[in-house]
Image 1: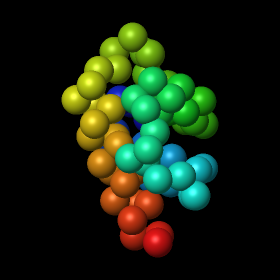
Image 2: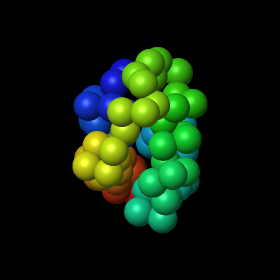
Image 3: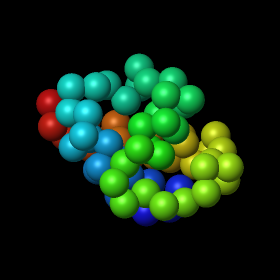
Image 4: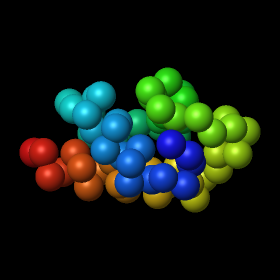
Length: 67
């Protein structure tokens, strides 16, 4: 997965952290969680706020559907 794979990353985060409301996670913490995901292999330096926002919204959609 790459930073631009927001939907795939959102699904992976929802599966790995099912009880966590994504809107309560700071971007720095979310970035660390993304870097630790199996299958994530993008350059950590290329993350930015718009990419993290897109991932957070994808994660939120998955989390919301599971509630």
